[in-house]
Image (cartoon, rainbow over all chains, first blue to last red):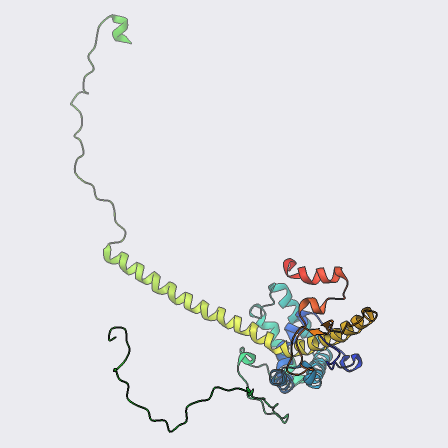
Length: 173
Length: 153
Protein backbone atom coordinates (compact mmCIF):
# COMPACT_ATOMS: atom_id res chain seq x y z
CA UNK A 1 0.00 0.00 0.00
CA UNK A 2 1.14 3.47 -0.78
CA UNK A 3 2.33 5.50 2.19
CA UNK A 4 2.81 9.25 2.31
CA UNK A 5 6.44 8.77 1.27
CA UNK A 6 5.61 6.79 -1.86
CA UNK A 7 5.93 8.99 -4.90
CA UNK A 8 3.01 8.33 -7.19
CA UNK A 9 2.51 10.02 -10.56
CA UNK A 10 -0.39 12.40 -11.07
CA UNK A 11 -3.50 11.09 -12.73
CA UNK A 12 -3.01 13.44 -15.67
CA UNK A 13 0.41 11.88 -16.34
CA UNK A 14 -1.18 8.46 -16.50
CA UNK A 15 -4.08 9.34 -18.73
CA UNK A 16 -3.42 8.49 -22.36
CA UNK A 17 -5.69 7.14 -25.03
CA UNK A 18 -5.99 3.43 -24.32
CA UNK A 19 -6.79 0.82 -26.94
CA UNK A 20 -10.42 0.29 -26.08
CA UNK A 21 -10.91 -2.90 -28.08
CA UNK A 22 -12.01 -6.41 -27.22
CA UNK A 23 -10.00 -9.58 -27.23
CA UNK A 24 -10.97 -10.78 -30.74
CA UNK A 25 -9.62 -7.54 -32.19
CA UNK A 26 -6.43 -7.84 -30.18
CA UNK A 27 -6.01 -11.50 -31.12
CA UNK A 28 -6.55 -10.73 -34.78
CA UNK A 29 -4.09 -7.86 -34.75
CA UNK A 30 -1.67 -9.42 -32.25
CA UNK A 31 1.17 -10.52 -34.51
CA UNK A 32 1.09 -7.31 -36.54
CA UNK A 33 1.16 -5.20 -33.38
CA UNK A 34 3.94 -7.37 -31.99
CA UNK A 35 6.00 -7.15 -35.16
CA UNK A 36 5.35 -3.48 -35.90
CA UNK A 37 6.02 -2.33 -32.33
CA UNK A 38 8.76 -4.83 -31.61
CA UNK A 39 11.34 -2.28 -30.55
CA UNK A 40 8.98 -0.42 -28.21
CA UNK A 41 7.68 -3.65 -26.73
CA UNK A 42 11.19 -4.96 -26.07
CA UNK A 43 12.25 -1.63 -24.61
CA UNK A 44 9.27 -1.57 -22.25
CA UNK A 45 9.61 -5.17 -21.15
CA UNK A 46 13.36 -4.78 -20.57
CA UNK A 47 12.72 -1.62 -18.52
CA UNK A 48 10.02 -3.37 -16.53
CA UNK A 49 12.29 -6.30 -15.79
CA UNK A 50 15.40 -4.26 -14.98
CA UNK A 51 13.83 -1.53 -12.89
CA UNK A 52 11.19 -3.71 -11.19
CA UNK A 53 9.11 -0.57 -10.84
CA UNK A 54 6.30 0.49 -13.19
CA UNK A 55 6.71 4.14 -12.20
CA UNK A 56 10.06 4.32 -14.00
CA UNK A 57 8.74 2.80 -17.22
CA UNK A 58 5.73 5.02 -17.81
CA UNK A 59 7.11 6.72 -20.90
CA UNK A 60 8.11 3.41 -22.45
CA UNK A 61 4.63 2.11 -21.69
CA UNK A 62 3.01 5.12 -23.31
CA UNK A 63 5.14 4.58 -26.39
CA UNK A 64 3.98 0.94 -26.52
CA UNK A 65 0.33 1.91 -26.31
CA UNK A 66 0.57 4.70 -28.86
CA UNK A 67 2.41 2.44 -31.29
CA UNK A 68 -0.23 -0.26 -30.93
CA UNK A 69 -2.98 2.32 -31.38
CA UNK A 70 -1.24 3.62 -34.47
CA UNK A 71 -1.11 0.16 -36.04
CA UNK A 72 -4.75 -0.53 -35.17
CA UNK A 73 -5.78 2.76 -36.75
CA UNK A 74 -3.78 2.05 -39.88
CA UNK A 75 -5.31 -1.40 -40.17
CA UNK A 76 -8.75 0.09 -39.79
CA UNK A 77 -7.98 2.57 -42.51
CA UNK A 78 -6.45 0.21 -45.06
CA UNK A 79 -7.54 -3.36 -44.33
CA UNK A 80 -10.90 -3.13 -42.60
CA UNK A 81 -12.67 -5.69 -44.79
CA UNK A 82 -9.97 -8.34 -44.57
CA UNK A 83 -9.57 -7.65 -40.88
CA UNK A 84 -13.27 -8.10 -40.21
CA UNK A 85 -13.43 -11.26 -42.31
CA UNK A 86 -10.49 -12.77 -40.40
CA UNK A 87 -11.90 -11.73 -37.04
CA UNK A 88 -15.31 -13.15 -37.93
CA UNK A 89 -13.69 -16.44 -38.90
CA UNK A 90 -11.65 -16.60 -35.68
CA UNK A 91 -14.65 -15.83 -33.52
CA UNK A 92 -16.96 -18.30 -35.20
CA UNK A 93 -14.49 -21.16 -35.53
CA UNK A 94 -13.39 -21.81 -31.96
CA UNK A 95 -14.08 -20.40 -28.56
CA UNK A 96 -10.39 -19.83 -27.91
CA UNK A 97 -9.78 -17.93 -31.18
CA UNK A 98 -7.38 -20.52 -32.58
CA UNK A 99 -5.59 -19.46 -35.73
CA UNK A 100 -5.53 -22.89 -37.36
CA UNK A 101 -9.02 -22.96 -39.00
CA UNK A 102 -8.68 -19.53 -40.64
CA UNK A 103 -5.61 -19.71 -42.87
CA UNK A 104 -7.36 -18.39 -45.97
CA UNK A 105 -8.67 -15.15 -44.46
CA UNK A 106 -5.36 -14.84 -42.63
CA UNK A 107 -3.45 -14.99 -45.91
CA UNK A 108 -5.68 -12.24 -47.33
CA UNK A 109 -5.07 -10.02 -44.30
CA UNK A 110 -1.34 -10.80 -44.39
CA UNK A 111 -1.25 -9.67 -47.99
CA UNK A 112 -3.07 -6.45 -47.25
CA UNK A 113 -0.90 -5.64 -44.24
CA UNK A 114 2.29 -6.35 -46.19
CA UNK A 115 1.26 -4.01 -48.96
CA UNK A 116 -0.16 -1.15 -46.90
CA UNK A 117 1.62 -1.24 -43.54
CA UNK A 118 4.82 -2.94 -44.73
CA UNK A 119 4.67 -5.47 -41.89
CA UNK A 120 5.60 -9.07 -42.69
CA UNK A 121 3.85 -11.71 -40.61
CA UNK A 122 6.58 -13.37 -38.52
CA UNK A 123 6.96 -17.17 -38.30
CA UNK A 124 4.53 -18.89 -35.96
CA UNK A 125 6.57 -18.96 -32.72
CA UNK A 126 8.38 -15.66 -33.21
CA UNK A 127 7.30 -13.93 -30.00
CA UNK A 128 8.14 -16.95 -27.84
CA UNK A 129 11.79 -16.69 -28.80
CA UNK A 130 14.38 -14.91 -26.68
CA UNK A 131 15.34 -11.54 -28.07
CA UNK A 132 18.48 -9.42 -27.86
CA UNK A 133 17.59 -5.77 -27.46
CA UNK A 134 19.93 -2.83 -27.91
CA UNK A 135 18.94 0.16 -25.87
CA UNK A 136 20.43 3.51 -24.92
CA UNK A 137 18.76 3.45 -21.50
CA UNK A 138 21.43 2.95 -18.81
CA UNK A 139 21.34 -0.23 -16.80
CA UNK A 140 20.14 0.38 -13.24
CA UNK A 141 22.74 -0.15 -10.56
CA UNK A 142 22.40 -3.29 -8.53
CA UNK A 143 23.39 -2.57 -4.95
CA UNK A 144 25.10 -5.51 -3.33
CA UNK A 145 24.23 -5.92 0.33
CA UNK A 146 27.13 -5.62 2.79
CA UNK A 147 26.47 -6.92 6.27
CA UNK A 148 28.07 -5.19 9.28
CA UNK A 149 29.32 -8.42 10.85
CA UNK A 150 30.51 -10.77 8.12
CA UNK A 151 31.94 -14.12 9.18
CA UNK A 152 35.77 -13.81 9.26
CA UNK A 153 37.25 -16.27 6.79
CA UNK A 154 40.57 -18.09 6.98
CA UNK A 155 43.54 -16.25 5.54
CA UNK A 156 44.75 -17.71 2.29
CA UNK A 157 48.18 -18.78 3.64
CA UNK A 158 46.89 -21.23 6.24
CA UNK A 159 48.66 -24.60 5.74
CA UNK A 160 46.33 -27.24 4.41
CA UNK A 161 47.14 -30.69 5.73
CA UNK A 162 46.22 -33.95 4.20
CA UNK A 163 43.22 -35.59 5.80
CA UNK A 164 44.02 -38.15 8.49
CA UNK A 165 41.59 -40.75 7.19
CA UNK A 166 41.23 -41.15 3.48
CA UNK A 167 37.58 -40.23 3.58
CA UNK A 168 34.52 -40.42 5.78
CA UNK A 169 32.12 -42.69 3.97
CA UNK A 170 29.97 -44.79 6.25
CA UNK A 171 31.60 -48.03 5.22
CA UNK A 172 35.08 -46.73 6.08
CA UNK A 173 34.37 -45.29 9.47
CA UNK B 1 -52.90 -91.04 -29.18
CA UNK B 2 -53.48 -94.13 -31.16
CA UNK B 3 -51.88 -96.26 -28.54
CA UNK B 4 -54.10 -95.08 -25.72
CA UNK B 5 -57.20 -95.05 -27.86
CA UNK B 6 -56.62 -98.63 -29.06
CA UNK B 7 -55.53 -99.74 -25.62
CA UNK B 8 -52.16 -100.95 -26.92
CA UNK B 9 -48.85 -99.94 -25.51
CA UNK B 10 -46.15 -98.96 -28.06
CA UNK B 11 -42.53 -98.93 -27.02
CA UNK B 12 -40.53 -95.83 -27.86
CA UNK B 13 -37.97 -97.06 -30.33
CA UNK B 14 -35.14 -95.54 -32.41
CA UNK B 15 -35.99 -94.44 -35.91
CA UNK B 16 -35.75 -96.98 -38.68
CA UNK B 17 -32.16 -97.40 -39.79
CA UNK B 18 -30.84 -96.29 -36.34
CA UNK B 19 -29.56 -92.99 -35.03
CA UNK B 20 -26.96 -91.05 -36.95
CA UNK B 21 -23.31 -91.22 -35.83
CA UNK B 22 -22.23 -88.82 -33.11
CA UNK B 23 -19.69 -86.15 -34.13
CA UNK B 24 -16.62 -86.53 -31.98
CA UNK B 25 -13.88 -85.34 -34.34
CA UNK B 26 -12.67 -81.80 -33.76
CA UNK B 27 -13.72 -79.26 -36.38
CA UNK B 28 -11.21 -76.42 -36.56
CA UNK B 29 -12.55 -72.88 -36.77
CA UNK B 30 -11.96 -71.02 -39.96
CA UNK B 31 -8.95 -68.72 -39.29
CA UNK B 32 -8.52 -65.31 -40.84
CA UNK B 33 -5.09 -64.49 -39.44
CA UNK B 34 -2.37 -66.83 -38.36
CA UNK B 35 0.22 -66.15 -35.69
CA UNK B 36 2.57 -64.33 -37.99
CA UNK B 37 -0.27 -62.40 -39.52
CA UNK B 38 -1.54 -61.34 -36.11
CA UNK B 39 1.87 -60.18 -34.95
CA UNK B 40 2.46 -58.34 -38.19
CA UNK B 41 -0.96 -56.69 -37.96
CA UNK B 42 -0.30 -55.67 -34.36
CA UNK B 43 3.07 -54.19 -35.18
CA UNK B 44 1.78 -52.41 -38.26
CA UNK B 45 -1.17 -50.79 -36.48
CA UNK B 46 0.97 -49.85 -33.47
CA UNK B 47 3.70 -48.26 -35.51
CA UNK B 48 1.20 -46.60 -37.83
CA UNK B 49 -0.76 -45.26 -34.87
CA UNK B 50 2.38 -44.00 -33.18
CA UNK B 51 3.40 -42.19 -36.32
CA UNK B 52 -0.04 -40.63 -36.61
CA UNK B 53 0.12 -39.60 -32.96
CA UNK B 54 3.53 -38.05 -33.53
CA UNK B 55 2.22 -36.03 -36.44
CA UNK B 56 -0.81 -34.71 -34.59
CA UNK B 57 1.28 -34.08 -31.47
CA UNK B 58 3.59 -31.91 -33.53
CA UNK B 59 0.63 -30.06 -34.94
CA UNK B 60 -0.95 -29.49 -31.53
CA UNK B 61 2.35 -28.20 -30.13
CA UNK B 62 2.66 -25.89 -33.10
CA UNK B 63 -0.79 -24.44 -32.50
CA UNK B 64 -0.08 -24.00 -28.81
CA UNK B 65 3.13 -22.15 -29.58
CA UNK B 66 1.32 -19.97 -32.09
CA UNK B 67 -1.35 -19.03 -29.54
CA UNK B 68 1.28 -18.30 -26.88
CA UNK B 69 3.22 -16.23 -29.37
CA UNK B 70 0.15 -14.13 -30.13
CA UNK B 71 -0.39 -13.64 -26.42
CA UNK B 72 3.19 -12.47 -25.90
CA UNK B 73 2.86 -10.09 -28.82
CA UNK B 74 0.10 -8.09 -27.12
CA UNK B 75 1.34 -8.64 -23.57
CA UNK B 76 3.48 -5.44 -23.35
CA UNK B 77 0.50 -3.34 -24.40
CA UNK B 78 -1.77 -4.96 -21.83
CA UNK B 79 0.90 -4.65 -19.15
CA UNK B 80 1.44 -0.95 -19.87
CA UNK B 81 -2.28 -0.33 -19.61
CA UNK B 82 -2.51 -2.31 -16.40
CA UNK B 83 0.44 -0.44 -14.84
CA UNK B 84 -1.21 2.90 -15.46
CA UNK B 85 -4.54 1.70 -14.09
CA UNK B 86 -2.90 0.29 -10.95
CA UNK B 87 -0.92 3.47 -10.29
CA UNK B 88 -4.02 5.60 -10.75
CA UNK B 89 -5.94 3.47 -8.31
CA UNK B 90 -3.09 3.56 -5.79
CA UNK B 91 -3.18 7.34 -5.77
CA UNK B 92 -6.97 7.38 -5.50
CA UNK B 93 -6.88 4.92 -2.61
CA UNK B 94 -4.30 7.00 -0.79
CA UNK B 95 -6.35 10.17 -1.27
CA UNK B 96 -9.52 8.48 -0.06
CA UNK B 97 -7.73 7.09 2.98
CA UNK B 98 -6.26 10.51 3.83
CA UNK B 99 -9.70 12.03 3.62
CA UNK B 100 -11.35 9.23 5.57
CA UNK B 101 -8.86 9.11 8.46
CA UNK B 102 -8.00 12.78 8.77
CA UNK B 103 -9.73 13.10 12.16
CA UNK B 104 -8.07 10.06 13.69
CA UNK B 105 -5.15 11.06 15.87
CA UNK B 106 -1.84 9.37 15.14
CA UNK B 107 -2.99 7.76 11.93
CA UNK B 108 -0.52 7.68 9.09
CA UNK B 109 -1.64 6.81 5.61
CA UNK B 110 -0.65 3.33 4.42
CA UNK B 111 0.39 2.26 7.92
CA UNK B 112 -1.31 1.16 11.11
CA UNK B 113 -0.77 4.13 13.45
CA UNK B 114 2.72 4.54 12.05
CA UNK B 115 3.58 0.85 11.92
CA UNK B 116 4.28 -0.02 8.30
CA UNK B 117 3.25 -3.22 6.55
CA UNK B 118 6.75 -3.73 5.17
CA UNK B 119 10.04 -2.39 6.43
CA UNK B 120 11.36 -1.37 3.04
CA UNK B 121 14.97 -0.67 2.07
CA UNK B 122 13.84 2.58 0.53
CA UNK B 123 10.68 4.40 1.70
CA UNK B 124 9.84 5.08 -1.92
CA UNK B 125 10.14 1.43 -2.93
CA UNK B 126 7.33 0.11 -5.10
CA UNK B 127 5.29 -2.90 -4.12
CA UNK B 128 2.42 -4.25 -6.16
CA UNK B 129 -0.82 -3.73 -4.23
CA UNK B 130 -2.65 -6.90 -3.24
CA UNK B 131 -6.18 -7.57 -4.41
CA UNK B 132 -7.74 -6.24 -1.21
CA UNK B 133 -5.47 -3.17 -1.22
CA UNK B 134 -6.58 -2.35 -4.70
CA UNK B 135 -10.31 -2.75 -4.05
CA UNK B 136 -10.31 -1.50 -0.46
CA UNK B 137 -12.46 1.57 -1.08
CA UNK B 138 -14.49 0.31 -4.01
CA UNK B 139 -18.15 -0.56 -4.19
CA UNK B 140 -18.73 -4.04 -2.64
CA UNK B 141 -20.70 -5.07 -5.72
CA UNK B 142 -17.70 -4.32 -7.95
CA UNK B 143 -15.38 -6.05 -5.51
CA UNK B 144 -17.59 -9.18 -5.50
CA UNK B 145 -17.87 -9.18 -9.25
CA UNK B 146 -14.12 -9.07 -9.63
CA UNK B 147 -13.47 -11.61 -6.88
CA UNK B 148 -15.96 -14.12 -8.26
CA UNK B 149 -15.30 -13.55 -11.93
CA UNK B 150 -13.08 -16.57 -12.29
CA UNK B 151 -15.89 -18.79 -11.04
CA UNK B 152 -18.19 -17.69 -13.84
CA UNK B 153 -15.84 -17.61 -16.78
